[in-house]
Length: 298
Image (cartoon, rainbow, N blue to C red; front, top):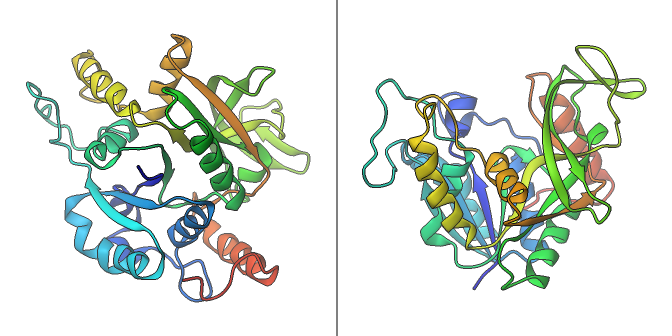
């Protein structure tokens, strides 16, 4: 039973143009954000990496990312494929449906490859070293305990863009740092005081937010499977998405799972706006100058 890093990368081709090679390098030796995430996860103790991709970008993805990771790092590498037609028996793709089914179905695509605790991340987000260590330590300490999950809780002001408003899942936690709810909050701006709302009013810049970095246990796949059937039976399934935060929030509200919010003070980087690319590149350069990463990385 291996601890697994599960990377949601099925949307990379459509978001960045004609395939994976259109991803802009962020490191001085041509590294991609995903390289840093995998490097940090393996050093934190994760033993296996599973990429969730689309079948049509497999060749480009293996050439640009997968083959290089497999040769450079001491970890097992596997692939799962998120496809619109990967549906439970008795269901078919609704007429006119073209967009993916969402992060819940993406994780479910890896059901045959998961036999132990796992961490889910986005392929194009940088999370920092601390969160991987904390999630790995939590998962190993709680091995065998069903539905005891965790998530990385980032400080809101450490996740904002200099170039425009963002949406963040603001966490409501109890006195023991267990997640009570995630409130999707739109139009958050970086301000001289920390953070504010596009529509007016303030927001606590020190709030913990979810950046879609979850620590989960293998029986969660069964929850996803049964939940997907119920989702597809819903009236709005033809246009809706089956999303991880929604699924986990439902489990918390029904008392079926606990989620420990593991605070991290690392800065999150991502390319929300085109202008963010330079900031991300400068940030990695600074991390290298501080000795946090080497160059080349792998």
